[in-house]
Image (tube, rainbow, N blue to C red):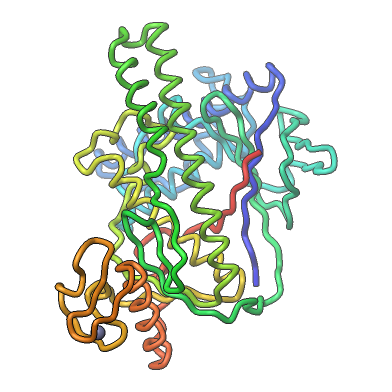
Length: 405
Ligand SMILES: [Zn+2]
């Protein structure tokens, strides 16, 4: 079994390296946007799509031309990769997986990728990485990256630079360590409840951050736009967003790791997860926007959380030789697990389940999880296992376990 994994570390660049990286990210953004303009003009003129190969030839001309001689300062491969990114964005758009490609903006997409392993060298023993035109860069090594490095992405967030190393390695077909099967009920008061009674605190338990965020946003709105104080306030908002995002990611990773290590088969409700935009939960890149969306920040976080929770469970279970089973969600909260009596009266309050027919009592979320488990077992018995996560329409997910130092 081939395992792809990404390891993310914080870089510790020199002042010159940081300046160069900003420049390279800017050049990649420029190339992406210029190519997008060309494609748009081309389309409006009724001509056919410009292929990557054709566009890469143009890139060579831009680098050697008189208008943009500074493009020569940036490494070639990341510039070409920006064109590949654009081509993929178009492909996703044509296949109706994504909206029309958008222009990249400074401060939002400050990243570039070295797609060719021949171009970089990683010296893990000394916590440093060699990148073309940048030289050796030191990074905070939290743990070693395993496997053969395939590509490297450099990115900036909240004034810090990170390197993400994607590796590939062959691992033996895993044998499930835990024979157990468990059902999960997803909720608001409790983020996840297992059929064995274990439960996890709600995802919106980051209220503390959120109060601080609202305060910072109000402070920002009072400042003169684009002024010095406004910029200061904005960077504070961005930092809080990053902190919320990190806490949430960390929480989801810990939860899904624990569950996937302790159970070979996990049953979840096959909820219709909407086609969510990546920015739904006010990401670091775009603070302030979407936050006051109709559905509210909490709702967005919840949605994003459930989607991400399932995605992580799916690949982590696969790593451990187990799998995720999606079951039809109808009546899981209203059916009695003992006598199968279905009634909305069985659920007397949000948290309390008491069967009107046989008197069975339990926490309503545990009942939900037991019903999910029972349906999963029935599906297995019929041999019609529906592997969930993957039935959801989405781009093929990269299995990433990201660790930030
Ligand atoms: Zn009953």
